[in-house]
Amino acid sequence: MSLASPLASPLAHPLSAVRQRIAQAAAAAGRDPHSVTLLAVSKTFPAEDIARAAALGQTAFGENYVQEAVDKIAALRPDWPALQWHFIGPLQSNKTRDVAEHFDWVHSIDRLKLAQRLSDQRPAELDPLQVCIQVNVDSETTKSGVRPEDASALAAAVAALPNLRLRGLMCIPAPREGLDAQRAPFARLRALRDAIAAEHGLTLDTLSMGMSADLEAAVLEGATIVRVGSAIFGARPALGAKA
Ligand SMILES: *Cc1c(COP(=O)(O)O)cnc(C)c1O
Image 1 (cartoon, rainbow, N blue to C red):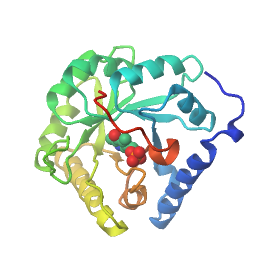
Image 2: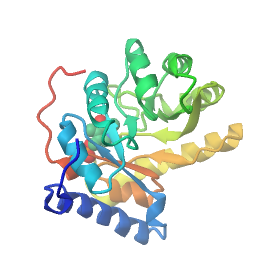
Image 3: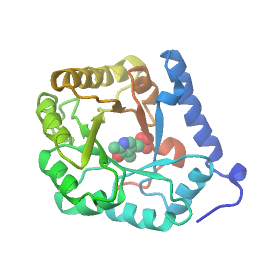
Image 4: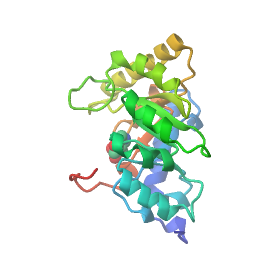
């Protein structure tokens, strides 16, 4: 679907405000703002909203639910063939095929079986699937993600798979108040990325970290992808049993 008037778009102001937050944090960190990719997290929002953001120049979109995402990708592809799709949610093994066939990136690799299935199922005519390993950086019992102490072994195994390209690490820290408190887990993820890259001789150029509430802290600690939903699209309806 194409839309006529991007300037009148209800997303114009929130999207430019988020871009400005990223630019200011990058400037404060002495980083090039273009070294941070804004991933617009469009889960639960309709394809119309994605088209609105695309009309404003947004190209990378993050989705959490396989069937919802596949439907939206199919609806948008005719008018917006160049959009980049990132799967960022928990992934069940029996849903890997749709992800391998329709997405460009997966940020939520937390076990080898998932990575093996994605590599096996990646269509030969597509580029390798770009992947990040999700690390449970706060070691919370309820969160997904590999334990920090297990991340290195998983990274080495994932990097060896033929149809995936391991790009780096991703995390979703527990919510914290205040910039310094928010920076701490992001600093740990960066250190872990550096250690794993050095240990295995890997080029890991990606840190996927920072959301609406803590993107400045993440950019200050080296985020290369920030995943922002509600600050762009508005509040999401409360989560049901959707997966
Ligand atoms: C929903 C979600 C986001 C975006 O969260 P906001 O707080 O709305 O910016 C980012 N990352 C992941 C993995 C998510 O599930």
